[in-house]
Length: 111
Length: 116
Image (cartoon, rainbow over all chains, first blue to last red; front, side, top):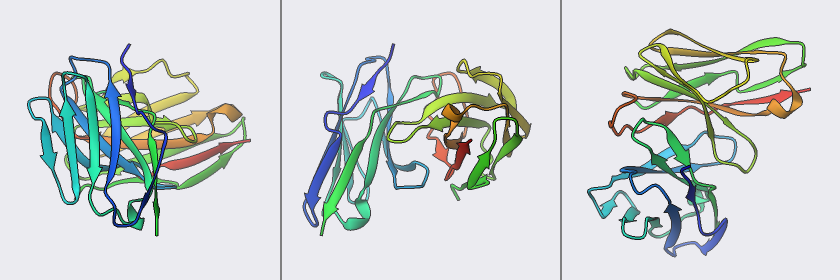
């Protein structure tokens, strides 16, 4: 079966520092990946996506890196703010538009 | 507009009750999804509707019954639930479903369900 996992379940960073959240996936045929942010009591919120024909994609304060060789995905958040505190999920699209979510990383920003 | 709405926000029901969860989107999306999320766990897919037809049922017990009245609405009918069914139920939608299309799914805020 497919599995999408995260290396660290929790991450604490100082406000203003950069955050890096990592994710490993096992299905080498997966060609689309999404990062979601989920705040307490809310549904997952789309942050950024990347297709397998790309290595890097940048958004506003966020960058996603994809390393297909080692099947690794990361989310970088620049100048982390208290509002960034949430659980972050990577999700893998298996081509039939079924999303498989990783276990999640809880990011805590220390003021 | 990438909004998916869900009602109610919270629901408490007994094991003999019948209730329904509702989901709505006006983005013209043709695929809609139900997910179940237990505390501190990732969302797990339950059902997928594509063009108002059920395309995927991830071996969900029959006490959960989905319905797609039209392309904008998705319901989840609940009957004879068990306490272990207590969870956050999330609805999502995307432009399309199936094939090799890569479509972002947009999630609603969820309905937090407690079964007593």
